[in-house]
Length: 324
Image (cartoon, rainbow, N blue to C red):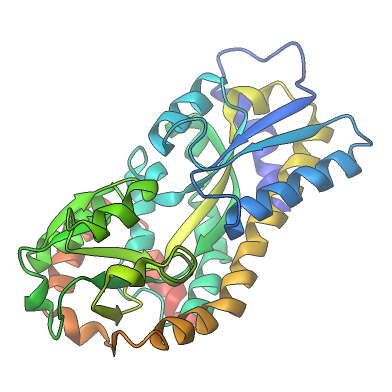
């Protein structure tokens, strides 16, 4: 892979020192629960690394925030206390703002289009500054499904979202989007969401179809809005300090295998997204499909903010146009 080859020498320029010993067992953290597609991909990566390395390397996977939330795990990656993670691009964008460009509303027409954008050379090039900017090596992208809205009350227009406490993933692009709508975006970790929706701590949530269905968030909802308004990328990360201590052979093997397995999540979501949405629609809840016009001027407001913040936004839009 061209991207992995470029990374071979780049980390040496930013690492203060290399490690003198290579870890035989790597620790990989995620926030997703064991049944989640990302967690399964992490396990498959570990199994294949053990096989390809002849048992020299193994990976212990820690799902469900066992090693902390994503901000805490990112700090651990920076210090070398954690070896690897499958992490939302959202969290990494809190440290490297340009990655916020991926969250442009309606950048992708559908789930398959989102996958093509993430597999583009432009998207890959956006990982190259991470060792210097964040202290991590990004080997490739995966994703979750497109974002939908689940509400305890009736939602017939974006105006109905005004003032609602709406659970979001804690990062700036989605915060700006819901602020533009006039909602009250409420950052909240994933394990708290079901109870918060059940007891009215939040009025609505921003979520992907997999978790709406698998974790039964629809149980405490009156309305599901299939808006498909944002893509939600994931990135496979290795600590730059750990990477700097690996041999070139191990960097190539680890980088290529991790990239393969995070990329496999794209195919999983493309295959399964429609089925989850159909099952959610079949729950008997009010189910509404909307497009960009539903959000009115909020999208233009978001674009005005992020065209200044994210230099790669125009380039991603060009890729999106080319890959329709």
